[in-house]
Length: 197
Image (cartoon, rainbow, N blue to C red):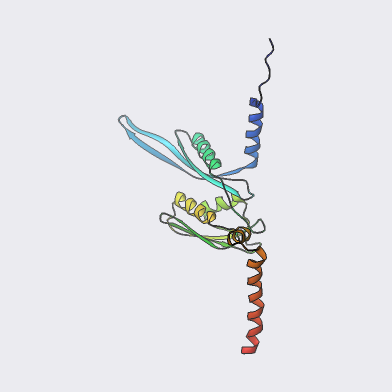
């Protein structure tokens, strides 16, 4: 008796998993050996912190702990893929505006930069920007240098980023009203300068 093929078979799921693996870039930020003291001595495990992104504006982070390094990294990567956020980018290469973020004692400052600046940031923050797909940014960490605090503070800052379109829709205005006003004030100030001199 022939069995009917089931819908959504295993092969399709494997193909989807491969596509997800191709789509995302992951970076190992830090790996730490931790010990649990038990009656017979110490039990060692490994804690991994991983950042995952598609280099097109989506990024996430995750932590995982296991007895073996590869398993800890796999757990962290899975958690990172479940916690992805979308960050609006200007021209696909930098942030729309400067932004501050903090987590615990970790404070970060992210500044938008001109084309050709590159990624000027410390280790954990650099991993976030590379997986996010930002090409030009200047970042500074003040306070805690713990990789977990730095990553969480960076994500706190990235969640505060807003595009002109989202700000305009929130205020019930047009994008041209927000951007145009800034451009109108700049020439007016330059025209008044010679008259005063």
